[in-house]
Length: 108
Image (cartoon, rainbow, N blue to C red; front, side, top):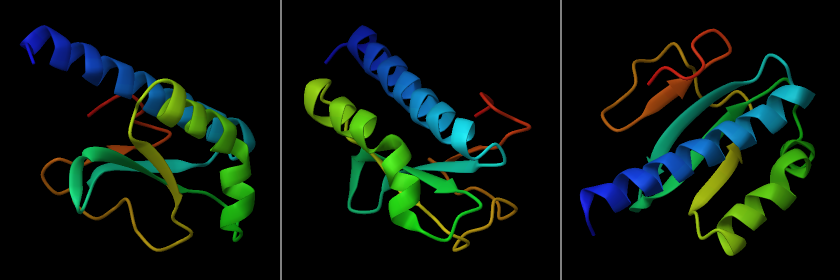
């Protein structure tokens, strides 16, 4: 894989992260996000969504169709994980992780 291909894939993944985050923000304006590689496979991206809702299924209903299209139609290994009060954005990010909040959107 060339450097050009890697950066093209990174740009596609960033657009997917932004798109899924935007969908959730429309429903949950105060949503905060935490992006990290899957613990067992660094090629898989987990987009943790912290929202004001205690039902993970309701949260996933907002993004499920688009997330599946990104996975199956576009080949992007991205998963939205509703993280209903199990993590805190105030904790320092570890290497390879990215915090996206309503105030610092787009900064990595």
